[in-house]
Image (cartoon, rainbow, N blue to C red; front, side):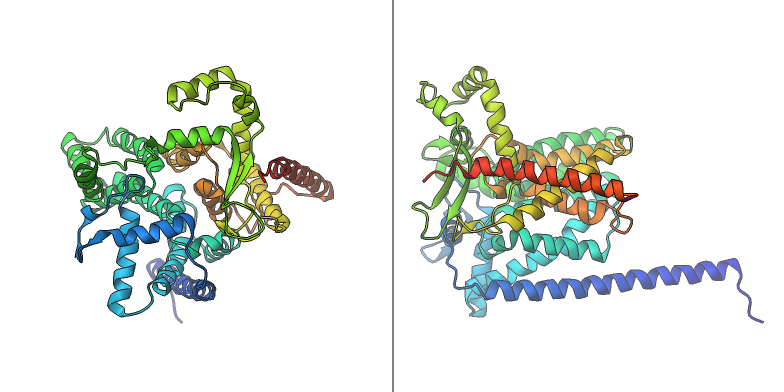
Length: 472
């Protein structure tokens, strides 16, 4: 007769867990391979699409590191953009040249790989580390499906929106790990590197770093002083690796001793210009079709007509901007509410639109239902279980979105909000029990359908008020 003692049983259970873990890793790899293959097929089939607008500019900036047949980071001299993202594109072009293949084809390979890693690994890793949400195959597949359905066209072009957000996710996750284990020497350097990168790729993401850095010091306050100083030096070292080249570029070309991107457009601060552009516009898009007369699709804000009757738009400065806010507080509040909705209202799955009049009802309905699920989830949350670290992380993720609200709104500027919503639906909600939906009987179902119908009606009404202000 065979008997099992407690120790043997525990070993058996441990072996099962290890097997399940290895099987999960294998299934994740199979999922990643499938997503990569589908995404590569999708991108290569559209390789005839030219890079246009911002994407063309980024692709061209990658060539600026070579001058007189010599490479140097200081050959880069854009006042508007940071060097880091064009440098990544330069590496792709250089590798393509070395391998003697088309650089655009290699870009699509890396773009498909990036799509895969973001959906299967980076976002699940972030939500698991920060919120303790369990990583599972269904959630990873759901992230991939949502990204493809709503954002697939963005991976056809060399744009900085997804790379900067991925860098923020990685940086925040590594930062959290380093705070949990401050004796580790590698984690703060890596966290600093990725968080420094976000400030160079998109300057508006500086606000995320300015929130995370002092908050980290607060969390380390109870540690030994020597350990805090050591962590701080390592973290600053990581940031410096990314920002020192920008400092040198600014010193050489612009005589500015600053590590930050100058962000100057037409001799003016870009963000201030964006604030004033946002006063007269609800939303913008980029047109590459023939049925609209301009490359910039603009939806005018009715507030613009009121402002044009004043002399407050003659000069652009922060002082005058706050004077406008003081004079028209209600109008600006209504305008920025519209901006917020429009940033969350996806019309097309691509940044460059061939037919701005195309029907996007199904895409819109799907998007509105996602935000309804998020709203219900928020209403049902037990706020007493929310940790201060979680709050700080969420604020740091959404701060670039918040600072984008008063500007010239594009949906891609609200990417952190959209992807955080997808992560919440995929991993933060119990999909098996569908606990988010309080449906216990047919009356609950009727109530939910009524609420859902009202929500869709409200969203379509708000969206229609934007579309009817299309500038022809």
